[in-house]
Image (cartoon, rainbow, N blue to C red; front, side, top):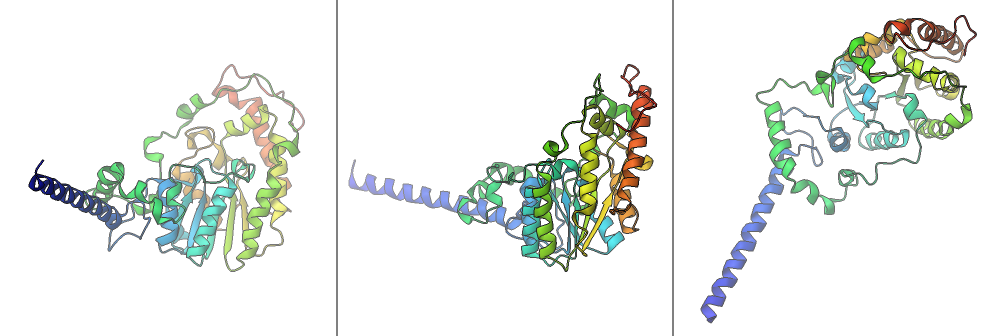
Amino acid sequence: MSDTGEKNNIRFLKRLALSSLLFLAAIAGIVILFDPFYHYHAPLGNMKAVLQDRDWQVAGTLDHFSYDSIVLGNSLVENTNTHWIEELYGNQAVKAIRAGGSNAELCFYMDRAFEAQKLERVFYCIDKSILCADPSATLDGFDYSFLLDRNPLNDGKYLWNKDVLLKKIPLQLACNTVLDYDEGEAYDWYRTKTFSAEAMIIHYEPAESFEEMQPVEELLKYLPENLRMLKERIKAHPETEFVLFFPPSSLLWWDQELRGGELEADRELLRRLSTAFSDCDNVKLYAFFAEETYCELDNYMDVSHFSPEVNFKLFEDMAAGRCIMTKENTEEGIARMDERIRRFSSEEIRDYYPEAVLLPDPSPAP
């Protein structure tokens, strides 16, 4: 090859390399500008925050959005509209959701929020699955962990991502132009679900026997550490009001607990929860026992996931000071819960499962 041909090849390769670099830089620039996961900044100008990918977006919203309150929890609170918080409490809230999450993972989000903002309120939905989860569980190792570590050196997975460029950014633009998108319904999932007894009973098959009550301490072995972790944060932020609430469940969920021998552990969990924060003046604690208005099957899509109407009623009742949980009223609440569960499992369940084995009635509390 002649010297001229070799020089032409070198020039071509240089131009190709430069063009490739410019192309990659342009793609990165587009992702940084629109930033659909809010990794670098909040929405620009008057653009709405389009929040539909909870695991990928929560960290960015906590780092960059303007808010004075957060809603923490698992999928049970995903259908909470943050506009309700503004209407009922006067707070500007964002949601920090970890479906199936542990207390440790949600405390990670809480810490991140406190790093970014001075919080007036923390609304934390603490159900059994959270309080009894392994406290060593963390968010490390997930596909989206590069969005959590604040390390720009591994942002390539975000900056040059086909789905981000061709799906997430177009969706963001569509929600801000042609679609009627409500920012308050971040991460919601209710639109594709049916909430009715007929729809939800297919998700449950009653066991054919009632098991002996399982050892309470074994079922609650992680509870002390989870309560300690939570209380540590409550004590560290005395200026913040912590609204902690134990959410409702359907009658089928309570029947499942009874048949599986876990109801005594549920009772003890509620008792310990009622006293865990008695020395914390900045805690308001709520519990929704097996009350008629909360446990009816028509409000559910499966044994534990309720409709957005129930989500609203939860916050409405808490804002009005109803359903407060104290050491003094917990035993009364547990007694009401026991009576309601026994009535369902010894009689009413046959309305939905004609062949279901019934709890003997009358009987003492199981």
